[in-house]
Length: 430
Ligand SMILES: NC(=O)c1ccc[n+]([C@@H]2O[C@H](COP(=O)([O-])OP(=O)(O)OC[C@H]3O[C@@H](n4cnc5c(N)ncnc54)[C@H](O)[C@@H]3O)[C@@H](O)[C@H]2O)c1
Image 1 (tube, helix red, strand yellow):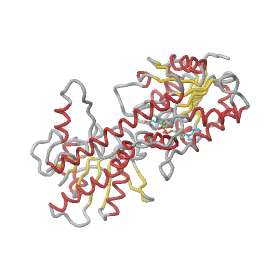
Image 2 (image 1 turned 180 degrees about the vertical axis):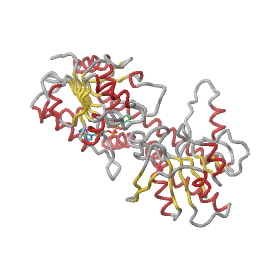
Image 3 (image 1 turned 60 degrees about the vertical axis):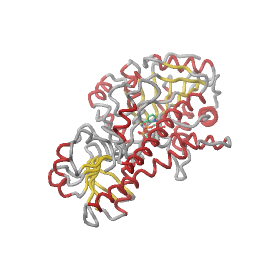
């Protein structure tokens, strides 16, 4: 039932799906970029990228090849040789996996599924999803049998938005399949675009690999945030300690404190693992604790800033300006950004809050709209405290230090600044 992978349907044209679709186009494939958001599709058709990592020129080049077709029509799935699913896998209100978006997408795919096609899930999810959710839904909708009439597999997406050191195709691609032929097929598909493909024995292994990677980051960064809080009390500079520790050539890997972990992956994926572990009557205490620590960081920052302001006899309803609200540098993503929790807490404590982010013109926090303010001498002088939340590469550090009356830096962006009594770094005490 094998067919050459000339035409690919990539379902979801977001942070993951769009760069992947353009990579396949770049390597000579025809791609249908399917997304349910008509505004997104229209923008892509006009050659206007909404992702900092995807330049308009790259998008326009892809459109000009006439091999990239952004569309909101699932019918195109019927024409593809392979269908790759990159839709969101969020948490619900009780912090459990919410697969409703994925299920809807799979039902649509099932309606158009053809014999001989390959379906690959790339969304991050708990072990078992490919076999327990994807396979039965596809079989029910299509009347076809996985492993016999069509191939099915899982290949975790490992893209790191904003990372300029690794292009998508340079990140080794883990592939798996329901049967030996499914995995062969997945390997053939991805070998045509990725520098290195790593085969694993089952979709469950591939699913857990992704969750392990992200749980490992959540746990280690949360640990560093705990150490940062200890260093604040002890008046020791955590950043200097980490720098010294990493001179050891083996046995130590540096992770850094910060204002909390955000994004659609690292705070979310470990809870998918925790949920599935609980179905087996077990759990990860590390994930539980790290999640708690991570969620507590915005209130830790607020309390530190409050204490510093109180020492300086600042007015009761002091004004606080956040530099950056993106969850990490050089991206325009605020999903799960702890900046939103921090703004909420500060507003609740009756601080007057504003923000500047060069990539994010507006945000909503608990139903309230905030728009990014201009950053200039006047705005900086009129804030009682500037919190450096995101260390975007374009941060005007000298200007902030020169004009803000007080700076609280959560990213060690001001590390090189000497003898400035109004500059505080998280985890550095004083
Ligand atoms: N963002 C990352 O850095 C990253 C990295 C690795 C893995 N992942 C995983 O990849 C998956 C996608 O994440 P993302 O960041 O690209 O999300 P995203 O929100 O940026 O993009 C998802 C896209 O899917 C579209 N969509 C929603 N429902 C759809 C449907 N039924 N049919 C077609 N399109 C639909 C949305 O309109 C959106 O454009 C998630 O499981 C995430 O955990 C994300």
